[in-house]
Amino acid sequence: MSETLNKAEIEQFISSGFVRLESAFSKEIANAALEILWNDLPCDKSDPSTWLEPVIRLGMYSDEPFIQSVNSPKLFTAFDQLIGKDKWIPCMSVGTFPVRFPSDKQPNDIGKHVDASIPGKDPGNFFEWRVNVKSKGRALLMLVLYSDVTENDAPTVIYEGSHVDVAQLLSKKGDEGLSFMEIANRLDELPKRREVYATGKAGTIYLCHPFLVHSAQPHHGITPKFMAQPPLLLRGEFSLSEEDTDCSPVERAIRLGLDLS
Image 1: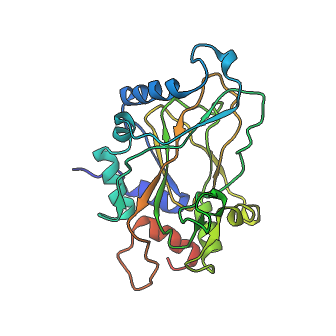
Image 2: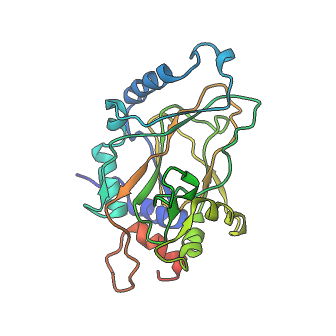
């Protein structure tokens, strides 16, 4: 099978922290997923007057359209290229879904953050979940678009190159790392980074470095936005040893922040 990502795309992932895959899954798969999601929403697809909240969160989904969307040969090849063969775990559920609606209300979840992957002392408290410099448990963050997303449709804001800054932030924190909130409270101290909007047609997937800073934003368009952001799980943890010369693009990106490149 031919490689999904070319050399330039892999280098972009290392330096920028993300790469965009268009047509990662079909419009038919996206529409089948949307039908399931709309059925679970407490509002009417054809009546915008029922869209009363700026964001409604739906749970995890393991229905066939969702599994198909994140388990294609094209994606698997990209995972092997970015992480390494047999180092990641296929994604068997997708969610949660923060469905975003056009609204004059300000959503309460638009702060910059890095997704966490290590349970804290209270696993039920997401804000206590942690991240360490070896990214234990998380190989990638994926931004999976099930609806068309323009710049007006609350696209996720990606802070280009911020994964390097986060690696440096975590470098002195060892295996314990930092909690979700500890990182969030320090993000404004990091260098200012260019903002990139995660736009695209339904079926587009952004493969993001696990340390990439990102944020939600209000919806100023007319069509609700459906996007999932599942983690791709890591079988172990990444190697940062200088003696390891066969490192993956994710590991190479972390080393940029540790000055081990």
